[in-house]
Length: 447
Image (cartoon, rainbow, N blue to C red; front, side, top):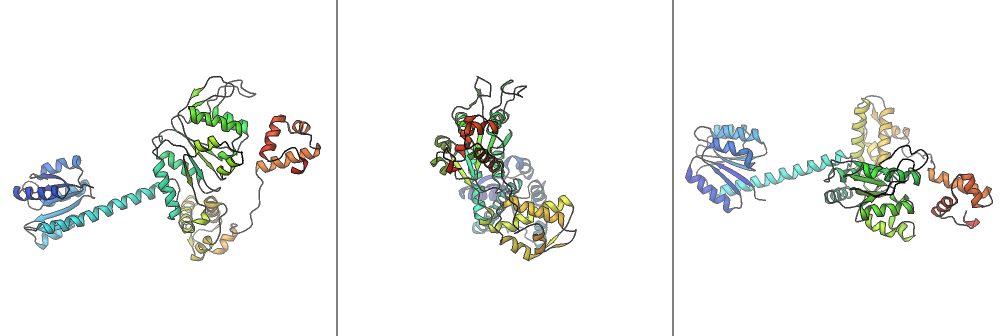
C-alpha cells in the first residue's frame, strides 16, 4: 500500500531532501513549508503519516501536532527537531507524538522510523478490520471464533456483493435465516426489502398465493388483489426457507421466476416482471432429493450457484462459551438481573450435543435467567432445572400428523382412495400427490 505522508518543515533543503527520499521509497508525499497550509489541506489529503518540524514560524510544530491528532488520532506522527531537549520530547509525547528524531539524522534513522510507522499502521488496519468483522458478526448474531464459522463469514462476504442465488444448508436452529439476512444487508440490495417465508409452515396452495399473489375472485375469500411476496420484495431479496418442501408445481413456477424474472398471480393471465434476488435454505440433502426424483434437477442447479453450509453447534464447541455469555448478557439486561456463573457450568455446556443448536442454547439461557434469583451464582444443578440434558418431549410436526391421519382414513375405507379423498375433503389428485410425497403407493403393504 502506498501510504500518504505530509512533510512540514520551513527549511527548504530538508523539505526537498525528505520529499525525494520518501517518493523514492514508494510513499505519496505532500510537502509544505507553511504549517497553516498543511493544516488546511489535511482533510483533503487524509494522510497516514505526518513528519513535522518542531520549530516553525506562525504555527509551532507542537500546535500542528495537536491539531493533526485532534483531526484524526490514527495519523502516525514523527517529530523532527534540532532542539532535542528532554522537555521537548516529553511535551511531544504528551501531545500524542508517535516518534521523535533529532536533527541532523541519517536517512537510515528515518528508514527505521518509517518501518516502525508502517508496522503500527498495519496493526491498526488489522485491528479495524477485526472490529468490523466482530461488529458484523454481532449485528446478525453470528457469534463465534471457530474456524468453521469464520469460513461461513468469509463466504458471506465473498458472495454478498454479487446478485447470485445461494442455498444455505444447516440443521434446524443453526441460524440459516441469520446468514441470509447478513448476505442481503451487505449487498447492493440492502436498502430494499428482505422477505422470508418458510415453505414447510403452510399448505402448498397458500404458499403459492403468498409468493405469487392473486387477483380478486381467484378463489373463495379473494376479495381484492394481493401482490404476493415476490412483488413485495421488488428490488430486494426473498428468502425461501425449507426449499426442499416445495411441491413439483411450485418448483416449476420458481424455475420460471429464475429464468425469466416474471410471476403470474393466481387468477391472472398477464406475467409481471420482478427484480428479486433469491436465497434458499434447507436442512435436507437437496442433491439426494434430486437423485430420488423428488426435486427438479434444473431448479437445483439454478438455486445452487453458491452454497453455504452452517456447521452444527456440536462441531464448534469453542463457540459455546462465547454464545452462552452473549445470550446471558442479553437476557440479564432484558430481565434486569446480574448473575455469576461457575466454571463447571461452562464445561458442562461443552459436553452437551445441542441437538437444537444455537436456538436451543439461547432458549436455555433465557430460561436460566428467568428462573435464577438476582445476584445468584449459576451452578450445574440450575442447568438441569431448565432441562439441559433432560429428555425432551417429542411434538409431532403437522406433516407427521397429516400423514398418520391419511393412513388411518385409508385403512378405514379399505384403501379406497376415492372414498378417502371425500372423507379428507381433498381432490383425488391431491391425495395421490400427498401419497407420492409420503412414498405411499397403491399397495396395501406400503401403508
